[in-house]
Length: 250
Image (tube, rainbow, N blue to C red; front, side, top):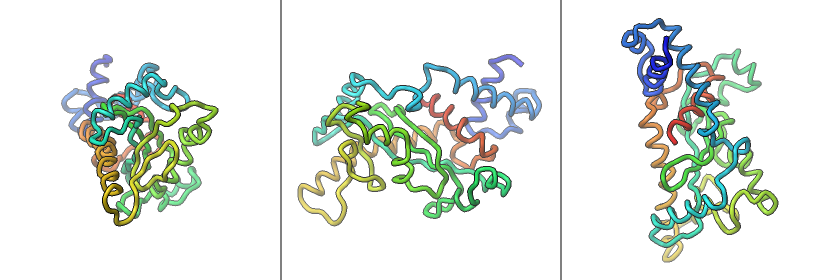
């Protein structure tokens, strides 16, 4: 079949359509549907100008970071001038993995289960700019991994811990995250406890910017409806699929 038909099949699949409906509307076989989706995912992930994955591809340049900071400043009621990203985690739900897959991954079945949200999943860590575009993402953790552990073991965090040498972000500039993360020179988080006066005001204005990543995830999942239900594809195909969807989102 031609490339336009393959792309149409893949877009329908990403949008949550049933493979059985897709094969009927496109007049192809079931194996052709899955092969087409696989080929389109590979093509998207091999397209250089769509790449955003750190460290194999560069984090936004310092000039770009200044432009992003201006965008966040325009959204900030308190005039926060040096915010360049909002960060959070998203659980990508899957069906329960077989014992054979768990043996291959050297993990337990329960390692995929997020008990807080009661579903089997992968933990996707991502940051976005003021335009709801992802500027970094990584998905190498199972569902029982907390956002904190996932981030501190990521390639980006390791680079930020040595920012004086790596110059990944501009000095004094920061991300904003929720209380799943901890305060760092490059990370602003809400103050904890029952707060009064200026401390509570700080949390309020910080939430104005923190909600941007929630909006980004909302647009992402709303556009690619396949993510609204547990993925039924093989576990080893989940990360390439999500990477392709992130690239298409941008």
